[in-house]
Amino acid sequence: MKTLLLKHKYLFICPMVFFLLLPLTGCSKDKFYSSLGFRAKSPESVEALAIKGLDYYERGKYNKAKQSFETLLSRYPFSEYSLLAELKAADSNFYMGNYEEAVLLYMDFEERHPTNEAIPYVMFQIAMSYYKQIDTIDRDVSNAVNAIYSFSRQLRAFPNSAYQDETTARIKAARNFLANHEYYVASYYERTGGYGEAEARLEYLLNQYPESTISPKAATLLDDLKNGQAPGRSMFGWLPKKLPDWEKLTPEEE
Image (cartoon, rainbow, N blue to C red; front, top):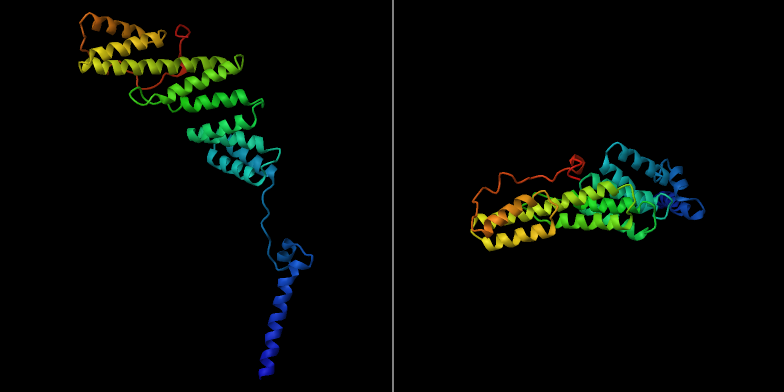
């Protein structure tokens, strides 16, 4: 009985040793698993990931596009498609509204490829990422400031690019936003009796943004305050809550 059990034990162990040693005898891992009836899932080729990412992107499925491009970059960081994947990953974040992440990716692209032909577009997209985050005039103005700085940087670097007209118009719109913010603050001081602070804000507005659409009203209010005739009017009736679309600017406003 004992001899029979030992015989069965060796019959079990021998095949196991054979299968464990089989991958080490020159057979590849894939062939080994195939011999057992398993099929290992091959990773997608770099071309397949690029095509899939672009297909998702063109159909507006930006999250899936982003995942495809990120997978491509992680698996094939030095492929001929990596530059495309870097740029389109940034674009996907931009169109999903992930503007902060988009800015970081665009900046990384600019740093890695400073002479690439896409740099004018990349610089424009950095500025647009800030521009898209501009809030109502009673909120933080840092995104407007960053947008103006970034648009101006792009315009200086590439004054004759295809983005020249739009860049100029968006700078004007962002400056109008900042002027309206200053008027908002000045109106608050005027309504709460802080006439000195109101005058200072209005003078700053007229010095910094003389071309703004709110400048005539700012000049009128400043004259009233200096003549001791605070109007006491509502500061909310005229205040715009949305930034004007640059495409809707009339030729006279431009």
